[in-house]
Amino acid sequence: MSKLLGNKLLGENIRRIRLSCGLTQEQTVARLQILGSPLSRSTYSLIEMGRGNIFVNDLVGLQQIFNVSYEEFFKDIPPSRSSRQSESR
Image 1 (spheres, rainbow, N blue to C red):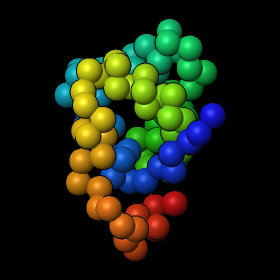
Image 2 (cartoon, rainbow, N blue to C red):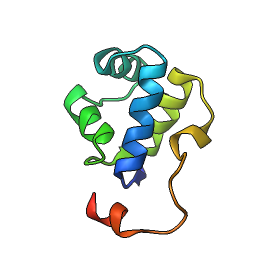
Image 3 (cartoon, rainbow, N blue to C red):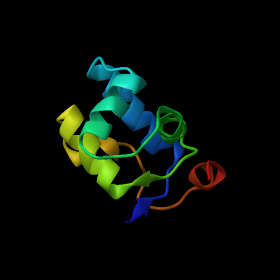
């Protein structure tokens, strides 16, 4: 399975989308688990903080749960690595 390296902006976007859907982290993780993800709430929290990596399959699950385009996850993320992004790794 492939992972996306997390960063602060990706995590902030995931959190923003989750909140706009009116879901808690626990509800989001429960829905991911129904789809077959073993993701825990603590790991999900790290992803939202930009300190955890996310499996591509889990991003696909989040897209289905949140019913948004993939572009929303990558909103405002620059196409090149900046010092801000590398600091969040």
